[in-house]
Length: 121
Image (cartoon, rainbow, N blue to C red; front, side, top):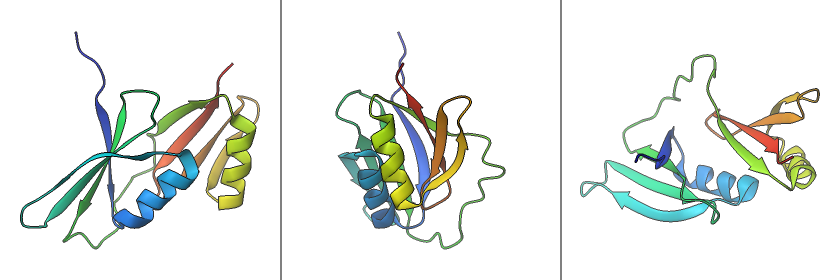
């Protein structure tokens, strides 16, 4: 058997990202790892519903924004509170694309990673 464990995003400002993921999606740290020399820090976020985790990696010496190419990848979340999250994300100003015909939209985190919000049907 094999199962998903985590997905990684590298971030420039860990505290800003932690705040975003908590406010936008309710994700909170479930475990952390820091290099003995302080060169990196890993924070794994969970949703309290599944075992899947989002790993945020902060590299001390990284100062340039990450090149995300054309952002032809994304992380997706299902929700039974679609309207509530849409309103929250509108207020946060983080919606970057909507597809009303498909009933989905995307938000972007502080580093520009796209996250799809999909209603549970």
